[in-house]
Length: 459
Ligand code: F0G
Image 1 (tube, rainbow, N blue to C red):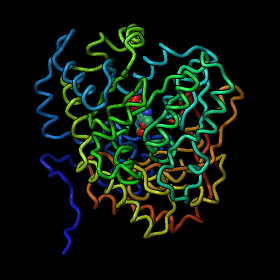
Image 2: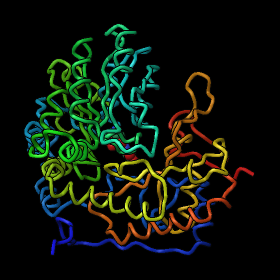
Image 3: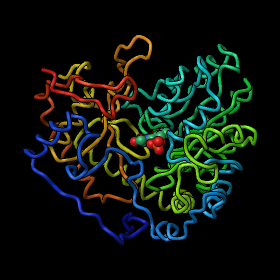
Image 4: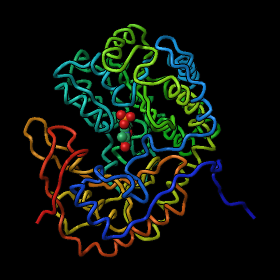
């Protein structure tokens, strides 16, 4: 008999979580102004808001914490992190930052001027925010197939090279500080980018004299998909694939809260020494001295260890298989989501489910609230709320997709939890025709409104 698949770790410490009643949840979500970010975590049973900083560190990482060197300058922990970045990613120069968006802040303070153009596959919301805040323009060149949620293709996160070349042709190189490749493509559903596509994008960057930045939050998951899906990579190790991926990049930004499996931390890394030196001033001003940036020594140590663990095949297989397990449960109930299953989350296709809620009333947000009310499961909206307003016209932007993301934290929940999530979603799905009312905005920030927005039932 073939042995079933099982996790590549066992559990040494547990954290209690609490169930609640529907009545309690109705009160809590009202008090949270129907914004899932505003809920106390104690009011959530299974938290799928994000996979960022929510993973469980290993015993080796906790041990590394104890060896942290908290020196202001030249800490051993900094050199541990430097060694791991060089060994695994191949970059010589880096600056630690407190998280991914801080790495973006340091980098974009260094290279973006007003009116610049930054093409790439779908920019993550903080990336877009940092670009638009500087009055520069992100251009999404993701392949069109990414917006057809039912289409099964292996690398749905890819850049369309024709769209990218059109942008590179249209604007002079001085106006394009870099092309941004996000692996995996979070906004498109945690979908991977193929090595062939990375190679093509890199060749276009070279042809037009533009730098290539890889937004690397989930680079290891991307490498796993390359190994499993791309011809010629089955026999390569994750570490070999990762090295090749970054061989094409000039710059990388990293939110280490994802694939380096730490609760906080990030960095920006450079191949070019001069650019690294230029960026140092912004690191010192915004984050901290160049050998700690926004991080404590112990956290740099855990991060270095996490880079090693996060690029192990057994760990990645366990992780991705759990997301696939949830996908298979949803398949059993006929619930539509972005196919194929992505790396870190299931992106439920809210538009296909809540067909009676108008887009002006925030379809995916409405589904997120319904799922919370059903079982205390917290997901996050990736739809019109996140898409925000057009910075010039201030009109609401309505993206093609209205998705409810159910992010799976690393090494945190069991497949029993996944069963609960799927059953809760099925219950909402079964009563979908009765859900006819969405929400309207009462209060919002001018940029990145989804974090703090306040809502009320639309009518
Ligand atoms: N880039 C990508 C692709 C991301 O997914 C994120 C964060 C960032 C950059 C910013 O990193 O949070 O450390 O400042 N994504 C989280 C998420 C928040 O839920 O997907 P950060």
